[in-house]
Length: 195
Image (cartoon, rainbow, N blue to C red; front, side):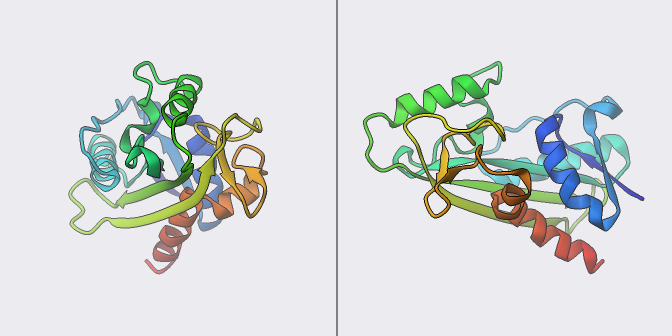
């Protein structure tokens, strides 16, 4: 069994990524189990933040590390909340407050198009000169009110018109196949299989 440190303490993200990695024989260890503090995320892009998190976790653990930096980009808001998605309404992090702020900020706009972005970075070691990088996007629109109880974050507001469902109404297998993180992970798994 191969071990990877997950540069996150998000239990729901761990569950999603662990289910996707298990078929290749990888076990994810959340960085908190190794007493690794969260890395700073001062960068304006998903790729820079994911890379910083992966290098940080790998350096402090001595193990390969996987980081995901993801967020919601809303067209009418100029790409916001973007890299600030988890803390859109400020600290402490709160899905409920983030969703309320998003709805308030979008209230004057008719354009509800949005997409989720996921940037995955796998560093084989802290100084890896060529980390594996994968990116996924999931396009939809933002509803005026939440629907569904599965998922996390903005999932209850993120609607896929072709499926007539929000991300929070989907079963986890379908979400893992279609989502931004699922798409990025499929790219990453294809690269890992060739290593």
